[in-house]
Image 1: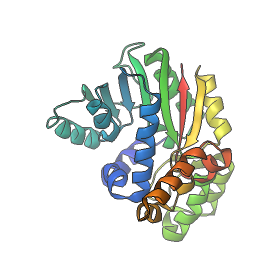
Image 2: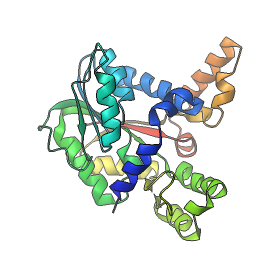
Image 3: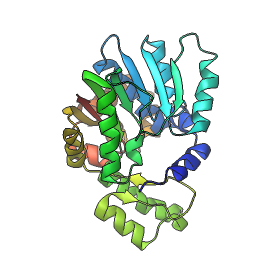
Image 4: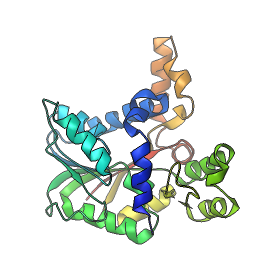
Length: 270
């Protein structure tokens, strides 16, 4: 089963907010994700940002006028969000410490949209993932939408080989073999990314279908810009920059791009 304490410990040290703002790979993901949300979200909605960390997307959506409820496993990140929320003119409605497997603090059909930008990175066991999505389905209104990020199988598994080169104390033959066979990664140390789950696109689609969601789109949120982000954001030719960004967008739903280009997103409807 997933060791939630290991996950909380990891996010007490890793600055997810700075990853999205100060790192070009995070910047590309953040800009693409914002674009996806603005394209698909209804004009008005009550949104649960489940696993939303310190509220990067929550604050963005609140600024756009949405009613946003932030929830995360990490007490530390929720405290950061509460402190930031106190300084905002357009506030998040609530910031709560919540495990994605238990959404009992929320009512049935309370939300129009749920963002799941974190839990599927970590929930190791199928029954945990099913429980999480069952709870999401319960709190969503009829025709409600879900946006769920995940780390595709090939991207995640290959990254564990790279992790071995950089941090051999975290990877041995056994957990490397396991991640390629099952998509599950158990870090051998308490440092670095913990408790990882890397599904194929078919596994993700089947998972959501079992929980009564209809697939609208599955796509990469880094695309062919993956691991080229620094070069892209240093392009001086404005027309070339926008052409490359257009190509990233146009190719983002190709299965081979989803599998090999970092983080991806599932968009579905109840």
